[in-house]
Image (cartoon, rainbow, N blue to C red; front, side):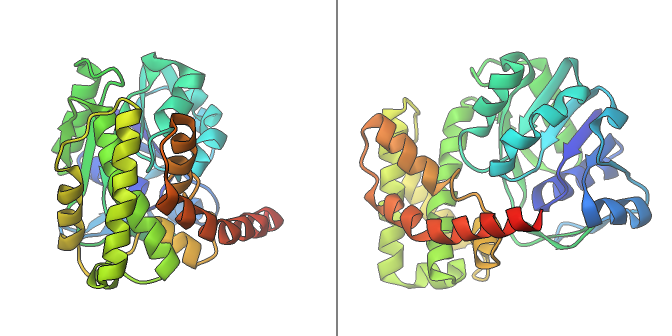
Length: 313
């Protein structure tokens, strides 16, 4: 397949690297130091599942140089989707599909507003990975996973084709029969763990070892389940217990990307995670006091990070 990976961070770098190593024609959209390194030295991925070293990769900061592709995989942060959405346009042909892999539940709708449902499918990923330095991605612990599906849950050849490409590249991939449920199941995990991790500034192992914070984690999840029901999304009866078992099984030193961004003073996905829970809860009439506290407590740090980023730009 001809695939563009937009953003070469922990998500885009890992999945794009696997796809390219499997023989797909992959173009990476990057900028700054990352673009320079990709052009000069290629892309490296370190992983317990096997390292990748791609000496020559196609990389540019200009989507018009890439041209129309079969699929665009968005690997940018959730808060960056609105600002990069229009940049994807030169790569979208009649049959191009856009797969957002952002945290949260709103990225696909943001893309549909611009491209319509004929070019957008739903997607979520599960991975613990991060940028060690430009051009070097490190995957840690959890086996990478991608779920994807049509937004109205009908089966389609384009979803099956992209799922097959990911699977052939060694990625555990599932065509979800209900992609909205998959997205909310991910939100059920990532928003409470990221928010509490950013507040406490400890790893998931330390977070779950405290009965007090573990109880807060469950309370935050209960709010999200109630909100999902109000939004017409079906989650399994044991969704919270299943999610907590997943948390219990994570390597103890794991931290979330949002947590790391906040701790290091960078703009984060706070608005797309705990902020979205609060906002959607307000719209649906569902109380979200735990997520509301997390969001309110982290907002000053988020505002400062965005001011500093704006000053730097």
